[in-house]
Length: 243
Image (cartoon, rainbow, N blue to C red; front, side):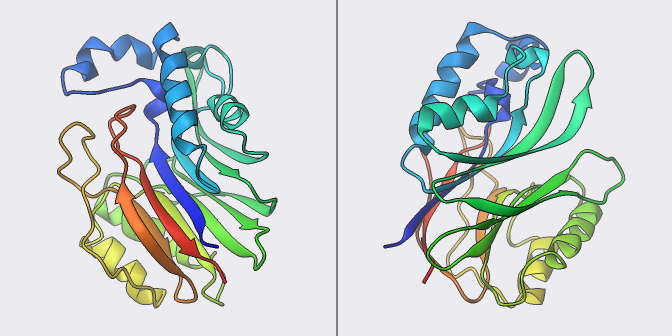
């Protein structure tokens, strides 16, 4: 049976739903609000049906998250028993930025990798998924600049298994038609046999920033962005043939 995958930049549950919200809801970047609890509930309900979830822009317990780890809160509500988290940037007294992997299967050999770049604070979280036939999953959040993206994807390529049994999910901050992504796919002998669909901004998607990629030993189906607007990014889901 195919495994259900989902990736989502959840924007720390700030809940941007239009460009003006970047200003109107700017205080949510600093302070916790009751509305964030409702947003986390919607996120948890959305990811509940997935076997393996990668989340980016998760607050791991800063003031703006009410000093509670959002990854733990989502996993508790979605029923995912296995969780790995990675902290990448701390703004003291405000936020703890990170990535998270939620899984129905045991996670082992967890690796907290800091990505290279001009500005520190980007990371890649890799774990081995204990499915019937194990594979590696990497949760990534790349930088904005193309040069940094090239460095980061090259770095990632050196940490994925040579047997082609890997999945990379996350916010690439670039299109699959951009040179960093194309170079990565070519180097890894991977393919993406469909037209990428836009995921940003969520209320009027124009750019394909969020992706699920697999190694040559694995195959995806039912690939699509989700309709939920809980963040400035849409989620992306797919089914994985892991045999």
